[in-house]
Image (cartoon, rainbow, N blue to C red; front, side):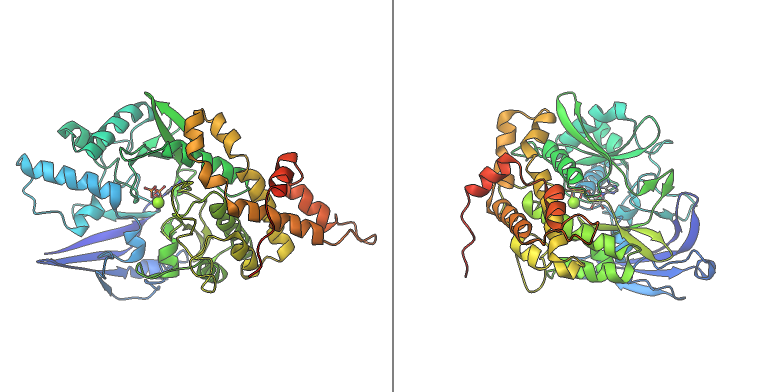
Length: 464
Ligand SMILES: Nc1ncnc2c1ncn2[C@@H]1O[C@H](COP(=O)(O)OP(=O)(O)O)[C@@H](O)[C@H]1O
Ligand SMILES: [Mg+2]
């Protein structure tokens, strides 16, 4: 079996190429060719390093544990939660005799994602000339249907879904990858949001925890999408504005795994992301500093699920990319304090803020700059209880998160910033620039009584 799917880009779709898919028994493969017109266009850019801007077909077949599709296309493929919804829907339709279908293949999954809410700017048009799939005329449901989405998602998780639940989630609960229950939704102005729901397996208020982390990240001057926590019939829902939609346009997105050409088996590092930023970012210097800030933040809030699909890039123009706003930030109070993405090859597996600090120069930051950024991150992360309370979290819910925020790395971070403060040169009479020490102190805000008390309660680090 072979199919050819036309590939387009953007809200006003521009044809850029053709995706060919072949299935022979259990074997699946795909090929992609850019259109000549696109190759000749001044707007042309390579979708991924695996698809350089050249004429002719490039072939891809499924690697171990990987996708049948090229990485940039696979970034828009459902997995985890979305795949679960599609699988259940397919099985139900077959059971009911509504489907003449064989078991779903990889192309069926890829095309089961709603065109309206598909991640990034890639769009697929089938042999009938339809952008697949459009579940409803408006694409994603309005906020008012949130309660229904939550209930249907929960039913799927519990294995108790009805045909109506599946029909309701079709295309809407499947547009983004990731494990957690989620759906696409639009607000009254037509802006697209990602809605994340509690999972039946949660042992704490994960949804509020994610919103807390987004607020703390924003306080730490990390770029984040707009977000809010809403109550949907007693169920907390995180609403996060889609950053791949900008003024009604679609913005091309790829995961960091794609831009780094990272194989899914091996370990990867923040310094590898830096190398990619140096080569491909439209704002390399700023993005490198932003990445260091995020890495420090991840350590201090124990967001240890920072794998390369939880970092991404938006296409800025002419083959230049920019770090997408931060997403999927979660404090993990119950996990080991080790980042999923290593800091560097030298540090290996690590969750040490000292390692991060010692590596700052690779991110284009000197020690003073890194300490100043760290001061801002410490200050923001220290506000976790206040932020949690402002979100309406109950005392016991807040306490569950304590180990993610009150730990040795936080104390060490404070020591680093305080150390930098003590070492910083005094202002020179000749310069108008604020003294480094003052700058550090101001930006870190570390002189608060609480911080000093915390510092006083900690022992100096042991020298090895
Ligand atoms: N605000 C956003 N705008 C656009 N795409 C997003 C946004 N947040 C997440 N994504 C995309 O959706 C995927 C799933 O979201 P994520 O929050 O990582 O879910 P999960 O917790 O299930 O891993 C991400 O890998 C990313 O590709
Ligand atoms: Mg994720």
